[in-house]
Image (tube, rainbow, N blue to C red; front, side, top):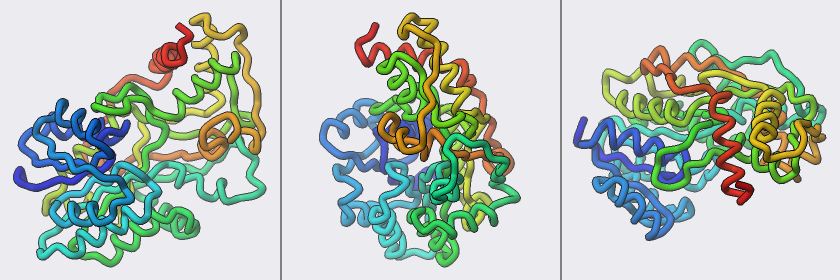
Length: 342
């Protein structure tokens, strides 16, 4: 399988860049093509990974995506969890291949899928706890039911349809939770949730949390996530069939944390580093949260709890990086530097 062609989107993003690094390091003989937005990003990829071919275009360039997908044996669509037209273009490209051999499609999603019921509920109190924990090995039926019940998860629903009807298109959907750690890719190396929380804390001079801060999400280090994707790609063989298909919904947390606890630790680190005057946290109401934090309560005030068993049992995935708690002081220091506060 060393001659297979892999086509990737999102190669200069936080996740996609890490995955590309992991794949090029662990499989230097693989042939990769990456979709990038402009000549500068193409140059960055070429400088970091001389063996990677770049194609300039965006997710809106459906003809380019369809053409490149048609040439590829494995697709990694890591640029967006919500760009349906790009996903449809990938599907058209794969369907039009003149082969009965299996082709493999890894699609990025996000753990906010697990919070779909809370997001859709007008009565959900942001920051509230939940006892619901999703299991991606024995509980995929519940996961599929949740996705099917919420049509706004358009890409997830589309991939479920592909998996149900396409015999030679083997799919896997990956739902990352809160990702932490510095990325090692050639582009963006910064995550969203914790760095943005640190930014807001530094700018406002005190911490923030949504509601009571009791909602919980899973967490994973970006390097562990990169290794999971690499293991999934390595399983794209006839022997790895169990890793793909309708059941292949991968929840990827190595631990979990409440947003209140994360806020406390970010605020403590900022205070310890002399960056804010007081070690206090402001509670934000659901409607106010979106004015302060990116995506507001949808990320910082919902529950996305999971037992990530599928990758461990089928791919041998074993997270081994340090904890989120260990990374928070670095995140705060990096944000302070980025904001010109140090």
